[in-house]
Image 1: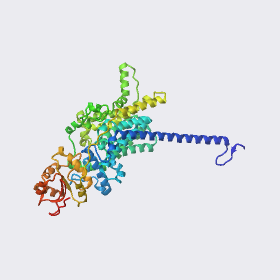
Image 2: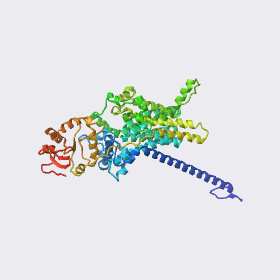
Image 3: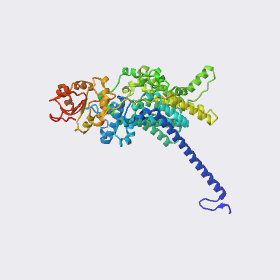
Image 4: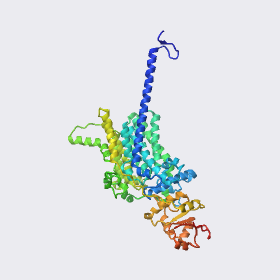
Length: 589
């Protein structure tokens, strides 16, 4: 019995054979651990490289992270939204949608983007600072970084190449469209729709296993909901694109599984409607009360033109000088290298047809699906004048509230980049040598980054800090109106500053700056602009306004207010009048 193991647990196995089997299993286990560690190391290196690329492209924001924003318009609005969300969720969550602007109206957060998810992303930082500029810029950078990460994951899943993942991530986060919108933080938060595209592809590419399949579809559903809570433009524009990708995948699915997939996709859209509806309801109420729609004629000036897809951002190091003076909404170039790689198979087939070469019937792959979805997005971006968007504007709820059809370019960019990455991966697989394949992928990634190379954006606006707002923060509760008031939509830019400064005291504010203004706002503003006239005071008291903050309060205005409104505080030319206080309560600082 020499050489045999008599253990009851191990059975009669030759000792030499048992030792060699155990050694082989150990080596295989060690090999798997080594490969997993190397994959993790490469992924970490790719993530660090991509993060460094994104932060370098946004080095202007990084340099002035805590004290400056791009301009005195929409960045101040978005900074206020982020701070309001964090304030309301911390103090009174049920009043989240009833923001403090446009008093006495309700659901005023629904007049613009809600930015709930970007606000939650910077909530940990809000535990250490209440600086709205810092929170806004952090949310801006997180949108850039997460969009790049989502693009990397999509590229890695499609091509199994870290280099092509980096290329796709850079194309998503650092493309001209994104860089041109340095004043729109919500434009940077497109990561969730990219993840929805990713989970949809994985759902069809790895169809086996019902639980895993449905998990991927559920993840796509959650990603789309988070997109609604980050950027509703992307949600509305990505939804039909996602439906097109699902239809393509369904057509490629085996007949035996197609019925089950169709049922699951129908359940996907039903579930998405259910989870989005509670957050869409405030918009529906505000729409009904305030008529928050835009006629198709108004959108004509905000649609894209074919030449816009050749326009780079104004900061582009190579082609930016051709875009100076144009609007950011019209700088839509997805990148010449990306477009060329995405169209590569079509160009090859065209060349073969010109040569008269025989045609081979090929089953279209996901590159063709992404390319067709991008063509749909380009068509939609032209707006109502091109026809297709007009159909959606008339029949699909929500499209009549979108102002800028050209922002469809934000959906087109990742679709074209995905098609390009797939085509480059297919081309690299024809090369025999691994070094040649890696060189091609690296060359493509480097070319994308080099083409998008841009000068740093200048952060131009420094929000001032006035002591009058500290006084308002300590004053008893009561609604506030700030003067001067706008005489119409064209003069509403000053209200962006007043809206932003309300983060210092959080009292209800008659002023407001958003995508819409409530009905009657400019008429009331016209009346109250005559303060301290009898009509202005009567309207203020009718609305329940307590504090009047006048920023151009000279001696003549103070004299006119004597006997009509009590001067509660004065800081230089900033005067606060308390309409509820009696004479003799003046507190001059």
